[in-house]
Length: 123
Image (cartoon, rainbow, N blue to C red):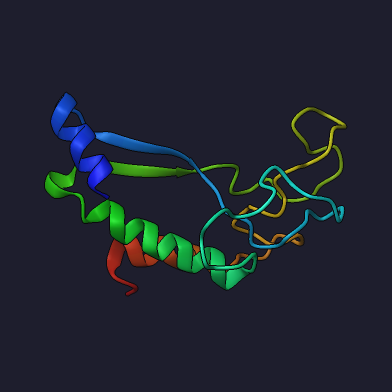
């Protein structure tokens, strides 16, 4: 995470990472590609455990930036699960139902464990 260290030192500012997201399923609840067409060059796969492992690694890396330069991370649409009329606009498709922190029925995914671990070491 040298990038964050460099930016923080150069501008003498704290950093907040915005709009983190990763697929836990290859397609949305409607069976179509979502907003993220793939997870890019990360080795985790589009599965719940992969989403969790990505967040474990991300949080560890952000916490390792010297002097606490990274103050947090915002996950993009963690609760936008399928529901009638829920989408970017009323009546429009929900293109992020496969990147939420909850499955299509609203059950918490393993990724939430990364948040607990990040705060209290998993206790």
